[in-house]
Amino acid sequence: MDESELEEELRNFGVDVHDIGAVDPVELSYITAYPGEEVNHMEMGKVLNAFIDLETESEWEPSRVEATVLRFEDEVMNTWYAKAEWFEGLRDYRISETEFSTRVLGTLEEDL
Image (cartoon, rainbow, N blue to C red):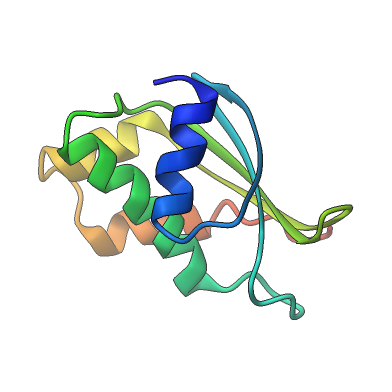
């Protein structure tokens, strides 16, 4: 899956993709629908669920996802990431959905 195909798939999941710089690892920037003080965790979940669904449908092979959340096209709100092995652990039932979410939430940058 190349950058344009991945962008189209994420948009189909309702993600306002700003840019995909690479696919392995995934370098994603998206514009949040919730430009408050903190990143909306439900929106992060929507992005992650898109990747989980793509993997389930054998359309995406797990790789690291590095996400930049934008308030507007030129204003970074925060960054987060998910490691390939976390997606694999979730798929193989080695970690729970709660553990997966906790790990990803733990990657949010503190001082942006």
